[in-house]
Image (cartoon, rainbow, N blue to C red; front, side):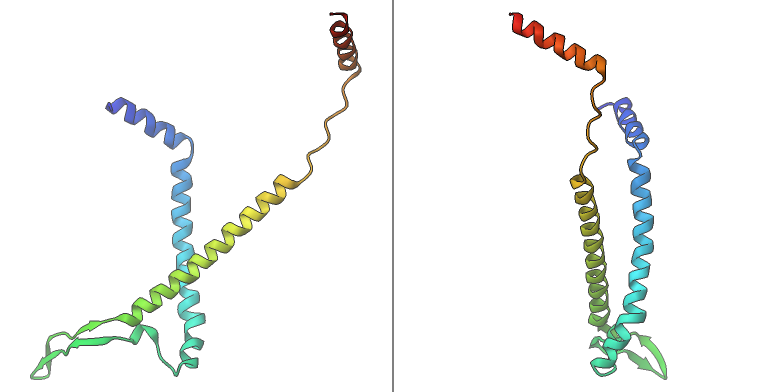
Length: 143
C-alpha cells in the first residue's frame, strides 16, 4: 500500500467527520467518567460505607510486607495489596456501564419510535400525471 493511498484514505476519513466525532466522543466520555467518579465517591460510597460499618473502600488493603523504619525514619515503604481501591474502580465501571447502557437503550427506543411514525401520505397525482397514466393504460390494452 503506497503512501499516497494512505494519505487519500486518511483524507477521506477526516473529511467524513469520523475523526471529529471520535474526538468529541472521547472528550465527552472523559467528562462523563469524571461525573460518574464523583457520583460514586461523593454520593453513593459514603452512605454505603455507613451501612457497612463506616468502612472506606479505598482504605481497604492487605499488607504483604510491613514498612521498615530505622531511627524513626521510613527506610522502605510497606508493600500492600490495595483491593479496596480495586473495588472502588470496579464499582465506578459498573455504574458507568449501566449509565451508558441506559443511554444507548433510550436512543434505540427513540429511533424505533421515529421509524414507526407513519409516513406522510403521498401527494395526490397531478392532473397531468393522471392523464399520462390513462394513456399508458390504453396503450397497454392495445397490445
